[in-house]
Length: 301
Image (cartoon, rainbow, N blue to C red; front, side, top):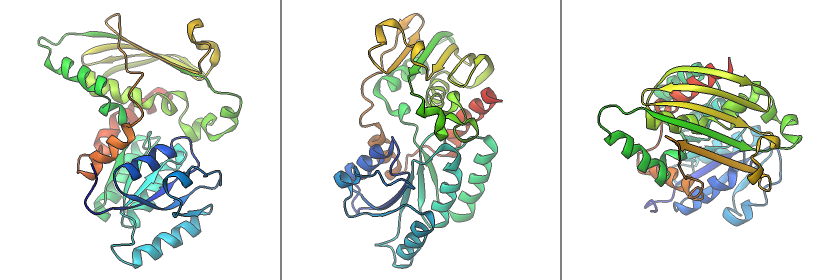
């Protein structure tokens, strides 16, 4: 579904792993990417989605260009800034977007600490702009069906959930910002936050949380949610892959009351679905993002 009048988008973090999904979502929703920023210039993927977009490797030049567009009026200014930068920069880039008169569409985790959400809420109120978080698992058809099933249950049935997510990463991972807990939030935040958000969205608030293993490359723990007991295991170490999955780099498993819950497929267009929701006024805001941010912070400390 396309908006009637195309909106102008900026993108921060254009060379990142997830950036092409944002580019595709911008184009698929009938809008245009007009300016992009990344300190690294490996952004040839832009040829496919936005060959005419201005590209910058320095924030100051990007900032100057965005301000120039703002002063040129409604047809030229940025209406949205999509943020796919390293986790620890998200809140700064959200503030930049709002001060530039644009709404922000930010990858998860929205921020690393709960008090960062408070600060963003204040600048939302000051500017009248909005910050949206990409919580795409909430739009996965299988996840929606499971939530509807749980919501319809009578008598407060308690579920047993086992989540395992192993996505093997090489030595580069620990040299990059992703391997620095101060910048990524560690394994539970970097690769687990969207699963925690999904589980709380389906099974309710956290009543208790415990961590059994906390290492740089793997974490294990348990959650007591309103309607489920959850055992979780997250890892970026290939040795944690089950034997049957050693040929592949990523393996995810979610069992519900002993039965496999399959949601491996259907990820391709979820960012586009998130964008459609935002453009129609139904995006996931700060209040939606907060519970998972509070949980991963608790797990981390």
